[in-house]
Image (cartoon, rainbow, N blue to C red; front, side, top):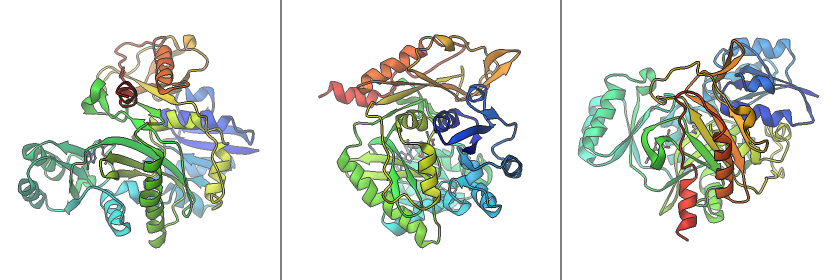
Length: 426
Ligand code: AMP
Ligand code: GLY
């Protein structure tokens, strides 16, 4: 029997804990730092996800058999390397592997080297040169800070003036600090976005079912970007033909390219794709499960997650297969009033006990305060429903949502709209 530690405290980590708990091989689950909902499924440990030494000390003292990392920051900071040096097993890539997410310049250059389709781009260290470039190219383009910027370092500019503003924000006002020391200016791609998460042991790539995130805060993909307001799986735009191209043209070459750099990438590789008229293009790579994609994908996985993770760490993915629930799943994120801008915390959450049993509620930012369950962040809960069709899955999720309330609660009412529009136009 195994003792498992999950690092992180959001909806993705709740989904991981929920799934790991179902493994007959797991006797005890800890989560650092976790949240009030995760506390129902795991023992929460008051240690921040960024406190690498603290996590190692905890894992050693409790003789943890497997540590699973949710967020990118500890991976980019080298938590795999640290644990490995102490002989501790940890699921996730090394710091060099995590550069795929930690440095967009590294990721773009590797894609070019491996012939992986991605938007054409230029890299600048001098903001003045970047400004001159956006003036020269004119029209829409995308401006990105090189490093980690909590999902805010990407600005899609519809014209030269917005592009100039974005370059100034990153290069002159240093809105993202050191993460903005290099600026990428790239071609604006048009199409539908899809998230493909894959397990990989550094040689073999084993993709999970695809999903689609909803990054903008309001219905119809309006308003500012968020961490993700909902997800569903599978997206109809992701046909089996596209899937084969993604494996052949993107996932396999990039893992091969990393291996060529001496990087054995083990963990989850997340490819954020744009499905264009010319086929799939990479928008970004992440070195972990997506949030909220995990809340729609993991519940569909029937295979024991511990078995897969072990196969990854032991380089045994070749020949391993994943078993999936054929039913689509949809996750609706309930957010605090004002999110993704400023918002208040500490609002009492009610109605969870009335949510139908087959609807899953993953906690993203909840806390206990004087015995009451309250909000403690921007994205508060993720409500996942299943159905025979995407439409049914979405309906079921919203039936769960209808039972829940807290002051200021808002959510998108059009999760899976791309899929449902396709259905209508058929
Ligand atoms: P990223 O963090 O690189 O995925 O960027 C965040 C979001 O910006 C993506 O999910 C897309 O919606 C958008 N985006 C990034 N790069 C491009 C691009 N080259 N063309 C169009 N949209 C983009
Ligand atoms: N949902 C986007 C991400 O996890 O990066």
